[in-house]
Amino acid sequence: MYRFLLTPRWLGINVLVVLAIAFCIFMGSWQLGKFEDRVETHQEAKREPTPGEMAVKPLEELLPVDKKTSGRQARATGIYGEQFIVPNRQVDGNNGSYVLALLKTDRGPALPVVRGWLAKGEPVPAVPDGKITVVGALQANENAGTDGVHTGGGLPSGQLGMISAASLVNLVPDDVHDAWVTLSKADSGLVAVPAAIPEGSGLDLKAFQNLGYTGEWFVFAGFVLFMWFRLVRREAEAVRDRELGLEPAPV
Image (cartoon, rainbow, N blue to C red):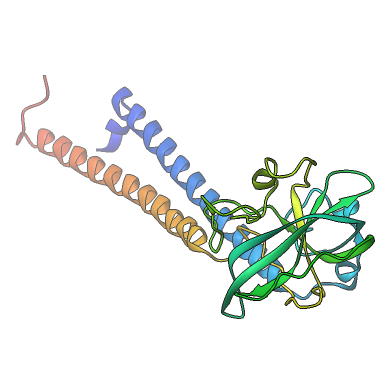
């Protein structure tokens, strides 16, 4: 009764079904892998740092900043130059501003340094004079649209909407690192800013979208298999009816 499965027409259908199911399983597995990667990076961000990761290292050894080096303690030496205010930043639920200064090092681009957080209305402390060594958590450039980051269109002179080399390139004459540090111990009159979790390392909406897509692809695979069984059953019934003379044979 099922010899029709070996006809050229059904051989073509069977090949398409196998390819469709294989593709759905591949895409579902890929989306599941993306979700597991996000879970892993989330757990990695939450775990306690090892003694080696807590050790302060020269800035050059930690660049370029990535998920592994983000948050590591970096050390750099130089002289403070231009200073900027980054408004609309919260620490412990209080709204204020970051105080950011460019550290001009002996070699390489200038390093943006968040000296600390300043409550609204408080005077901005001047930068220390002379050569200074800073130690702080290394951070990646902020991206427009990231939660808590304001692009700051139309901000007054001396203010930044987000901390990135792109936002500083037209404001200062020096090259700027594609990274910044937030001081572990804030300067006098300021509050230390906690290091931010690297972007994409949390169980955010995108992570659960990956999980949802995983389920969708496996459902698609099941649907393809279900439709194949229905077609096979209908064809088998048609063959049986023809054998019993209940249905005319196809021309």
